[in-house]
Image (cartoon, rainbow, N blue to C red; front, side, top):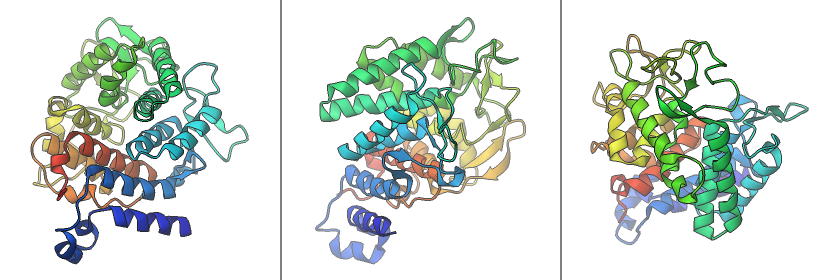
Length: 365
């Protein structure tokens, strides 16, 4: 509790005062200025105090498990906050506990309650991309060549083990090395478009690795144009590529849900042109003139589950900004941790808007 209180006080000092104490803004606004980095640093301190311990990123609502995706997200956030010590701690834990496969891909799931903590040694391709991206950014920010070399080895292994050539859809990214290829699923190959992390692919080309970043960006954009299902024209969480046209995968719920919600984050982060591919998502979320993020049943466009957490709303505001339709930007300056997943996406959205669309942040000067 003391650690959380200290972090909260530090974050309070770094956040714009109008976002947390409206009356104070009038008296101090003329003497205080804030940069996007201030928002990131304050939010990271709070996030770290709740979800990160000894380099391990925990999901408290899910038995305190850890996974490669979470480690990769936190490494990226530490770089964005210029927190070199925390980055090293997170990477050291990840390297020691998740790299047990005998290759350069991380085991995706680690359970503190299990005798053998790695309960599934299969990888998750989005986690691998996030880790490689974070290592590359860290290498460039802090001039650590070892990080760059490891990022390149991971990117090479992604290319070798989970990138495949599909006769109908081009170069595609399988979600994992095992279980999703054409031979593994009755309507395979199965892909998850939220694993195509557009800004990561755009930057990882600087590694000069075997990873075919341009071809993956091309196929990802092509699939986003195809994956428009039902009255709302929104993509499904999981896609079958068995036929010429992508369709919702048979063994997964045909919904736009907790996986696909990341698509606007990554597309908007990559730039307005990619964000435009998800204009139908913006239209569906804004049917009533305000961002209402929901799990959508694609066949009927019915709302199945409300997603009111600020983390999901931050993605909606990021998408709105990227399309030139900004709404309420204060969601980026008032970060408070809730559950692991939406809190992580919230902070990732803060980084994305700070890097790509700082004009959408309120009162920077």
